[in-house]
Figure 1 (cartoon, rainbow, N blue to C red):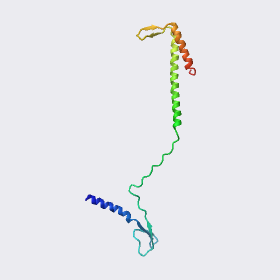
Figure 2 (cartoon, helix red, strand yellow; figure 1 turned 90 degrees about the vertical axis):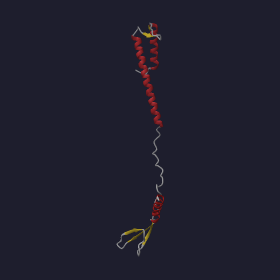
Figure 3 (cartoon, helix red, strand yellow; figure 1 turned 135 degrees about the vertical axis):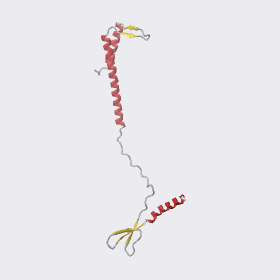
Figure 4 (cartoon, rainbow, N blue to C red; figure 1 turned 90 degrees about the horizontal axis):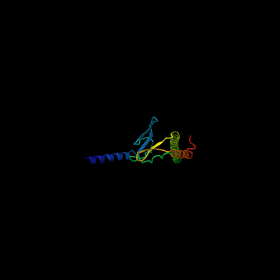
Length: 148
């Protein structure tokens, strides 16, 4: 029962497009333009050809192309390079600050001590302290010339 009802409704919908193919245009006795599916009797008329409706669901259109973006790879690469240079400069600055702090400690504290791997505390001799001072000064000269 339902299948036959669906078939009848489908045929009815499809046939309405075929029936609506013929349209007529004419002007009545008062000068008003009229339209209809049946031609008027006793009047001059013109047949209008009606285009069939588009298929159900219409035609698929391709999406509009996206606007082209300017090439940002070079800009991104330059920004990444600047970020890396900035990070390296910050690391150098922190290392130089630590070197200065160590040199200051070596210069201002003649009696330095350190803890050995066994946990014993030993005093650093003057010769070793002077060697550490010269190494720290050399590192500062080599790595921290432009840093103040």
